[in-house]
Image (cartoon, helix red, strand yellow):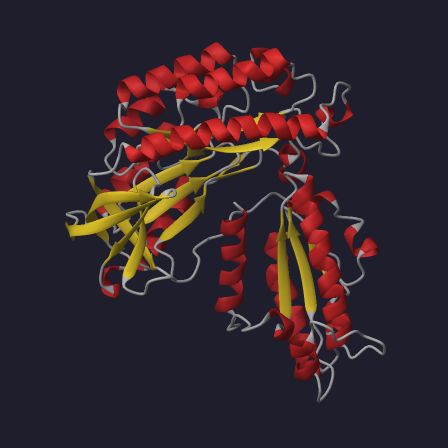
Length: 466
């Protein structure tokens, strides 16, 4: 989601004639997009703010400013001060909306979740201040309205990318007891169908070949539209597939994330199975394998519910790739609970997983609970899960060697200019020798061997999907 929102903001700058700085030390505006899901993410941002505090001092030629590691900036301002505007946006900005500028004076603008529409005003203020020679202080004198309804960006494409994120939902109504997202993103809002289709048309013109529909809880999408009536997520997938077919779009793969098991209907399973453009790849966060812990997390399903859902998915889509999120060390997690998490991972045999230990987030219920698990125990349990999943992932990947698969050629290899890096419908990574002009196209590739988690492949021919 942050990648998509960063790309959308970048599009605003590009449309106004701005260009990417070749070095951050010489930028006129720096935008830091933040995340609050884990405390470590915020700690990294505080580290970056320390860097930019020093950089702004050098750029302003403040007496006593330290030039160490900022030599590029020092050379840049040798003929006079050149102000830098610093903007912090995203979930951390929303969480610390009224304290961030006070605690970090180097920050000029704090753009909360609902204030991104004000970026045009920020850009105009900086441009005006630059023309008048007044510096950044004159561009930092107005407050941003963060009270209105969330607005989706028109386009979230990164320049030159063949894959693009397409946000279709914002916010979350689930209130998992460990999660800060509902508090910083607000309630669920579904994007209008026509707006989504309009963005797809733009992406098609740019030659995009793959999209990922995004939402904090993407499969609870619901929109009442005058053209289409009441649309839920399975219906939206069918509408998108039909639209791409009718417009002869180059977009051949549709993905989505992140889905919630409680909202994963049989109708959605059927759409994934039957629509050719919808990838047979599902990210299905489980978070834990113990019903007791799932209840404490407020996940609204049991271990048995989840396993039954997996059975229904695999019965209808036998070749599906399943990935997940799982958290260890939640407050009150016993050895028996941990064993249930391990056994669920063994039973489902995910293709891959995002694995982490519980990290208390200020403002969430679980952060205040007793029975917090010691850090070393959390790390130990996490490592056991990681070791198990690495073994399962390796086994599953080795079973794929020898197959011929459709691969989207995404970029040149940095290590070998004669090699292309691509990915399969199941999101597997493949490196293979091919001419540069294959980039952005689909190809049939034979998987020859496995190097870590990346396949070494051989180009067979261009895919019929072009």
